[in-house]
Amino acid sequence: MNHSKNGETLIFLIWGQSVIALFGSLFFSEVMDYVPCELCWYQRILMYPLVIIYGMSMIKKDLSMAFPGLILSGIGIFVSIYHYLIQKLPAFHEATESCGIIPCNTAYVNYFGFITIPFLAGVAFIVIFVLHITLLKQHRGK
Image (cartoon, rainbow, N blue to C red; front, side, top):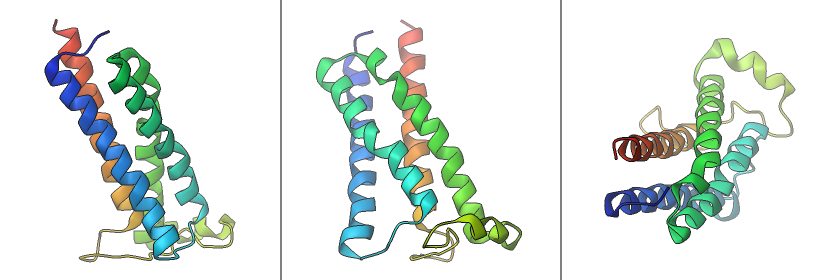
């Protein structure tokens, strides 16, 4: 399935979003010295391959190569939402007892009282997922 000009722009935006998320997570851990919790690692495992998946799809101009990205981003949405709930809802705090060295309810950042690292990851996964669905709908219409 080849890309149209609009499809190429969307795949570039998806790839760009995954790159921003990758560098954002590395900034928090390597520059700010925030140790990732277990759920942060799962989100990274789901996000980092998206840079390669969508990058290759963009280079090869083949959307069908990017299908695993849709699955990974969909799973990432649920992991991020769960992680965010652990941070924000006291009823979920008990779930952090099984976390590793860093409790998963640790909120290194809390901008405006609601923007945390899992929130940022969740937004990135949602943007990627929605743009990918938009690409699929565009190609279905042709």
